[in-house]
Image 1 (cartoon, rainbow, N blue to C red):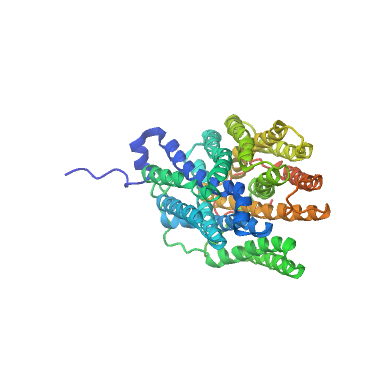
Image 2 (image 1 turned 30 degrees about the vertical axis):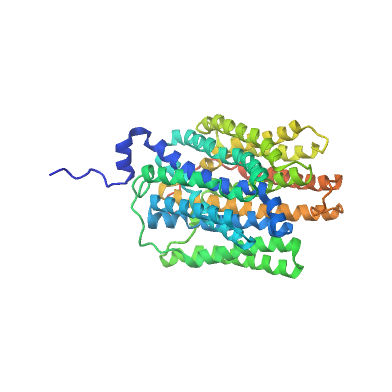
Length: 496
């Protein structure tokens, strides 16, 4: 008779015993591949928007929902990550998300009408939203504090390859094979993530914390939060393309829904039931300020991710392939910047690193006003590189600054919440950039539907870039408070 195994099969302890000290890095690499797939699916489609608009005869507002629909779905689903991990475990959750992302990419690639394309994007967004908080949870729970900066850097270097290489390859694919090829780019990443997940992602999670299989999901909170998010995004779109009464009604509904959401989250724990979002997190000042930075930073970052490819193609007259070529060096610089800053993140205060990053990001947006049709491509490339260096300072530092000092059981909630507010800002940022662009184009007497390029169109884009620079400067005020104070234990609420 053989002795029973010392650890449950598939647990992180059993996998660690099998693979040794390197196991935590193998685990991080495994979830990094899936996160790359989810990020690629969110960003690379932007180079295909002009082709989609032409194929299905879409106006700017409807074409924007290819991006916004993904982001709304991703934003809402992020709130469910802690519950799904507790209910199904890490391995099953990760595999399910990769299957859904794979199915969404395949459906979008074969879709013959715009509603199917939009459905595929929503499917991809739901999967991406659940996956994206997981790496931060693993970094905070599987790595020691003195290793967390390095782990964030290694993870960040890998993940930025998706938006760095994605638009370049995507631009070539659009020019060679059409917009449908964009959707199939996630397929090899999803297949690799499924194989790696089966080998290295534990059934439970780092620390082998038991699954909370009997904890009910806060469906009411999820419904209220979803109504608020959808109303906010649709209201912002209606500000530009719909009647004023419709925009006002939707924004009023969003305000009421988010107010009700906050009241519900405060009331539910008094009845002994776990809320969708633990408001105790906001009693810890660094986390509250980090969430505010994430909201504003998400608005500027994702708004610019939508705006830059449109600007290069529709204001400067560059092809999709040229757009990808211009963005590729900045992505590679970002990977290098993350590697350098990650080592600083274990020694220097997060508020300093995040503020440097926000300042560089603001400078890159403001610098875009110096670019015009006669400008060198190197100038455009230079300003995008400055912005990516700024991101290199922010990405490894923001989560660490916001979540250091939290009790470990709060980490999954914290990762989910900070990603939620970042993506809420990002989803709003895409719409806000579209609204601001339409407004400034109309003020200058131009429209993106006109084939000709004009100085008025460039002036409109420049004003939107200056708006993004101002948002980054605003986020710097909140980033000053990313200093750990005292440890926040589970369930403790502090008013500071």
